[in-house]
Amino acid sequence: MEKPSDSIEEISRAIEIASDHASAQLKLLLETKHLYQRLSIDPTSKLLAVLAEFDPAVRTSVEEFVKDVLPGEQFLASAGRLSAVSRTSTEPPEEMLCLLIGNVKLLCSSCGERELFSPVWYRDLHNELRKPVSAPIMPMRKSSGGVIDQLFLLEYQCQRCKGALEAFLVRRRGWYLTLEGRSPMEGIETPKHIPKKERTLFSEAVVAMNAGKTLAALFYLRTFIEQFARRQTGMMNTRADGDEIMDAYSKTLPNQFRDQLPSLRPWYAKLSEALHAARADEALLEEAMREISRHFDIRRVFSISEVAQSEKQ
Image (cartoon, rainbow, N blue to C red; front, side, top):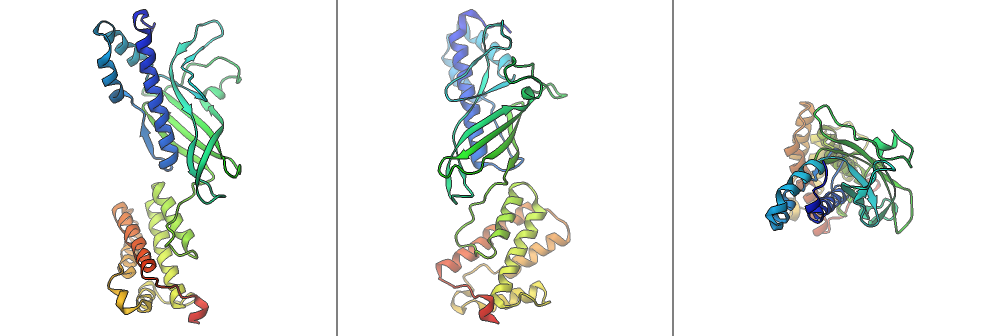
């Protein structure tokens, strides 16, 4: 669609707003979302107020142009604004939606804290696999439903430790960005009150929950409380079942605090029931995760010390 000559500035403003919104959503996706989760980059709500400011004489042509152009491909860019792209060496630059790749705050496995990560490399895999790097941008692939389908590979590096690169695979399909892969697997900021010896099991439960693997998360969570209870009771190598272990653990708690802690025994039973029935109960998982975490937080508040297995033996 040819750009209306009487609305060039308005169209540029609309594309800039849409590009900023999509770029902010990409940053939010990388910082706060997990595997197979997605965010919308639809700029309609942000553009409505802006379109209302335009002169009625050009508003219609701007709306038509934006409706035709914005659902199309996005061009990856970094450091500054890049909103004009040439498809061939002979054609003039064409304004299009840009996805600006900027800094993000991520949990660094080496530093142990959320640090600033900067992009060091990025590619639109659709175009990369169909042309040399220096060649013009190729026509975008569309899904069977006629929706634009792009796949972005992004690499970042921690600016504090300059350690190993972290890579993300992001799919843009229509108005959605989906996090479809990352290497290495995301680090989890586990609460400090979760016991160190069993912390990996709790982290794995969170990772599985974030990735939508509910049954796996239920298993990891049940294993976490069982292994902690075994260590506290000195029953690491016994053939006792979970109920016996949970009862024995309850008796290790000081009497004055026992009624104030969410009991682990019923949560062990509920998690076991869901696992035996192969029931991926997301509501149960969320509630169990919350109450089990609260149990250990209250232990911290009341300074209830852990008992090493060697002491029990």
